[in-house]
Image (cartoon, rainbow, N blue to C red; front, side, top):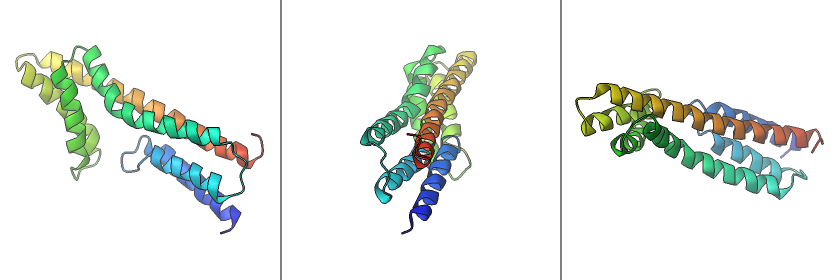
Length: 163
């Protein structure tokens, strides 16, 4: 395949990966890492392997953090273990719902329901806990976005022979 076509494919995958960090329909950093790997091994790029390893590790960390950070910020905002468990369960259930942003709605609903199961009389606490989960989601998404943009920039700079 022509190197120019491979480069275009890589850039498209990297761009879609960036979009996927905040659009749940796309697999985010998975697309970005695929674009990076295709660029490294599909062209005669001199991109050092350290970039592949570093971005691979950051992608795995991002995947883990997208589940852990909302649960931890839930606790920081007064949530209990019930809310943390609810956030993970709700996110997983929400991924299978045929609605837009199902995983996100599921996560917030899970936190809220989990907190109400723990203490059905304190709706304020459940709302604060849900706010904490939202803030955690924003942090996790921000981390993924930074990693995706960094991958994109590394490939573009390597294509321009700056790296």
